[in-house]
Length: 324
Image 1: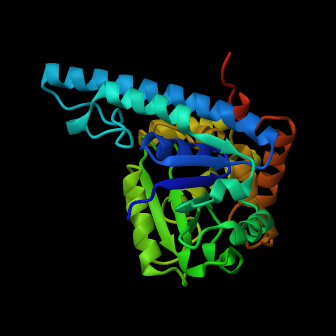
Image 2: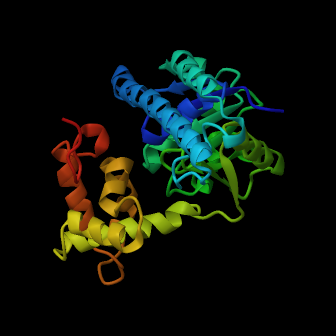
């Protein structure tokens, strides 16, 4: 049975995107937030997503028209499969779906009201183990029997939290890449007690919201993507904090040398430095002589930037400055 009601707990970069994509695909969607302050931080993200989706649809329409006129394939990276298939692309319908998502997506402060009759709850909160445990304990008695819970944690194993969810057979992980309407993958990872029925349901849910579901067959911190991405970002920050070079040069080395669209510090600004700081914290406990990177130095550097309000694109400044 297809899911109909989706709740996303947390309105951060990915939480906002997951919720908006679900609403874009016509599902009854709400974001649960802790406070009025959280609402104030989430609304600008949603407003920006409306602009991003509309701009993407316009770019797709122009690229498709040019491709047909020239008889040439579209340039790579233009098409967003999270929005539409090329063979079934109706720009007006897509624009209408964006506007409907913006109108229908709800923000809720009452957790009980948010999760009532939910088919799936997507936990997309900060990478802080104790905060997640507290959330699951609060959530567990409020859900309907049918509800499946997934964590979008980028680095913490779901088995750390299974016993707090109250439904070990209906709990697993589902991770997304940033800009999910373009980079439309969903890594679906079971923990040892996840039922096959729940796993299959979340694989299907990923397809419902136009993601390419990728099964992760063994529990692995970082899933597939972040198992490769996190060491990459650590190595870049290690070069910086050890005085080897500065972010601009490190990014240029990567972009020019590989043809990638963004360097590691540009990626960090998009992900957000608070998220990066939370990810590095467990590694700061590794003894220096065993650590492959200068984790303590990376942690101090990120903390200084966060304390200065330089938390990334959303704040207008991270390693780079954005906006006017």
